Length: 108
Image (cartoon, rainbow, N blue to C red; front, top):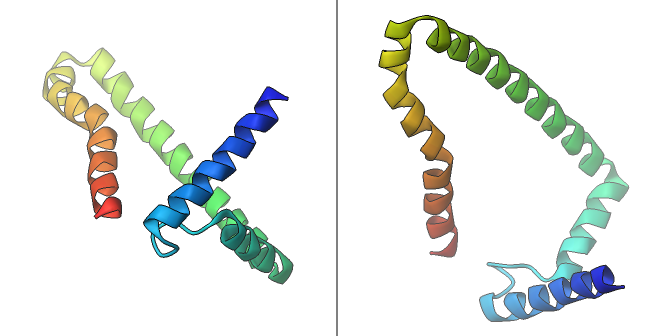
């Protein structure tokens, strides 16, 4: 029951946010639902969802393979560890920095 109330609160906050920000910035829930239903009826939604899932699978597989190879090299070869350590610290923090920039651009 509490979970359902939480979802209802989310929809209410979404409507309020849409009213404040405007339809261009944050479409209302019914606008989004209508777009989803239209795309589902045409079949385009499921095709695009499949394409996206394949891309995610390929990207995940590549990232895990390359990351594992680099990690093994850094663990086994001291020189590679010394050369890669600074890059590792930078790249570990990169997603947070990208999200901050994207949030700034989105809200601007």
